[in-house]
Amino acid sequence: MVLVVMGLPGVGKSSVVKAAMKKISSKITLINYGDIVAEIAKKNRDSIIDLPVKEHLKLQDAVVKKLSKIANKPKTIVDTHAILRRKPLGYIAGLHPLFFQKIKIDGFIFIDAPSDQIIARRISDKTRERIYLSKVEIDEYRLLSKVLIGSYAAKSGSPFYIIQNIDGKLDETSNDFKSILHNIGWEK
Image (cartoon, rainbow, N blue to C red; front, side, top):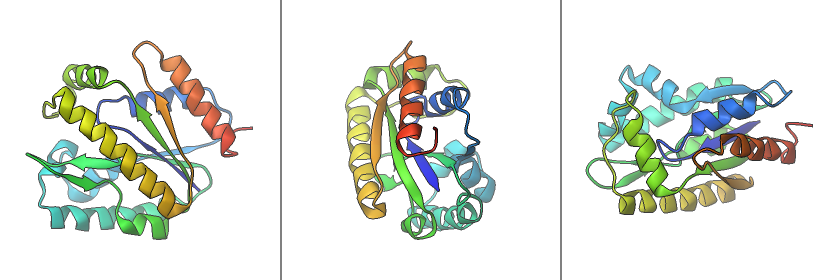
């Protein structure tokens, strides 16, 4: 049983999930999709987006095969992206079609934030090599992510939720996350 947590790079997905995990009593396994991609590709996570599309899809296929062996345990969160922005233009779906055949999904959470806050977080994160995106580009990226998550939810028959990660409100956002866990029956 998997809960897929998604959001744009820089929205604070990992921070929200870690803060929520401190508040819950259930044993939950956390898997970062990007870490598995980097491990299989033997590349830096930020350079993978530069791979040719066909190579990227083969890599996603390998990741799903690996995930299907470790992610179908009760209460597993997969931290990933709904959509990946290609350089210089274009997008690719964040989840390979096999994901929906191999993994039982309990729901999707999209962690969102205002575009200006995402831009500021991306700029201030010196641990990653992210390309600069304008507010218009971030707005488009957010919209396309929500559209794709809706299609992922329809394909899997799972609910999806949207929570806001507003600057200075991490505690409230992690409480929202915890409420979703309760809603899907993971946290009593």
